Length: 96
Image 1: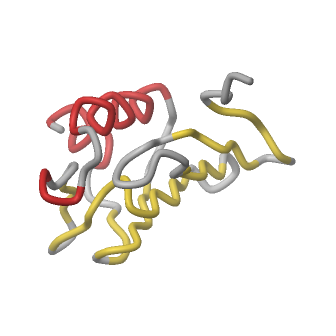
Image 2: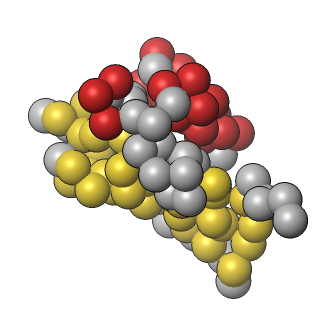
Image 3: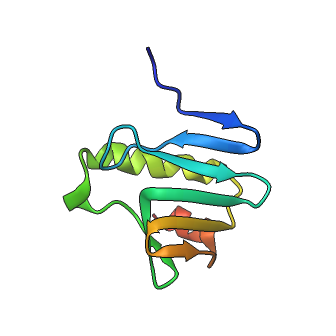
């Protein structure tokens, strides 16, 4: 069975974003243009950081997961580590 890359649940889109676990997901809430990134990203001082090599099963897969975020209209990101970020999120994604 092939795992879907992303799918919708009543306004919340589930995005498959493997990082340090192969089944990791992130959630995009279209109404508020918010991404619940979980462990896919780290927020530090209001700025986003990408995958940390020491916590990755496969760094290339983790980086490809981040590219998925570019297709969404995201204005704020909630990370498990570091809280939330809403400072030029689109530019930060492009830089990652």
